[in-house]
Length: 369
Image (cartoon, rainbow, N blue to C red; front, side, top):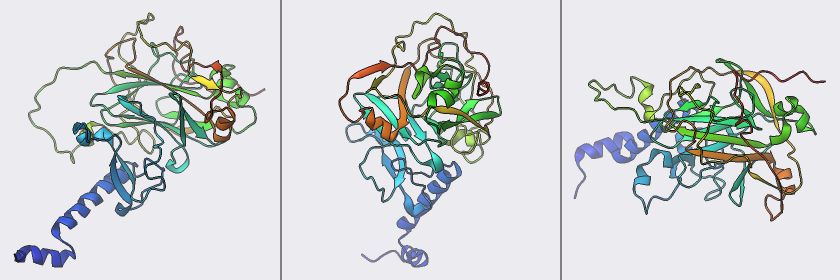
């Protein structure tokens, strides 16, 4: 059968079949969107994707037994076409049936290496390196994220408390970037790994005389109470408002990079009595006898604008999920026996302030002696 003259003419003009050209055009559009959102990084090796030919989309979880996973936007990630670790460990923490994924990101968007042993997750950092905590909402509803670093709230700098502590609100299928302890609505003090031989002295927690939970990051997730739905009579086009992009609002004032419509203040009157089924009185298990070689400093001031929104938790006092991860230098993780069987030596707590009340924002630490 001879080719349609019009199709033949189109192929001659484009130098390729029309279907191939359309696929390339769609890929170029997707790449430009990822680049505009500063998401053009391989989610396995952390390499920056510089042009459309570098981009490949892959499913995180196999979809053959559950076809719904094929269409789940939270189950798709950009990767290198020729990733140096094909089939290797994805350096993001996603528990089975989790609605979120957690990543530590270092310099130039490099994903920090992740290790796992007996259900506990560890990330390897470098002394003196600035890093970010990225939390992706893989669900179709808004969530509130209450996070701690070294046992201190990223909002207030006080011992973490999910009952009274404020969090960031992340839209459905959106990603939040937390790159420091919040100083006010416009600034954060950057997260930076300590660069000395004594992290207990130079970390923010150490300088506040609370070094007991160095090397531990906690994330408590609250889903939003469902709201009544209404028929929208005049829907807007996706290109008219970025509010409609994958169900999420991206506020470009929230620091460069990923950062979902962010903010703070859970509107619910959180009680001081908790019916939570989660217990954090004993935190994640630490293997070996080594103390962490790094903690997190109250670093340089960085622009990071947020705005306040209302949010009502599905359950005021009980998080839907609690994630605990640890970090240390890669060398010290190995010395601590992370990759081998070793006895449990101590326990740490990512939310040690459950009996207290968190005040305002994270104030600078006391001056050094």
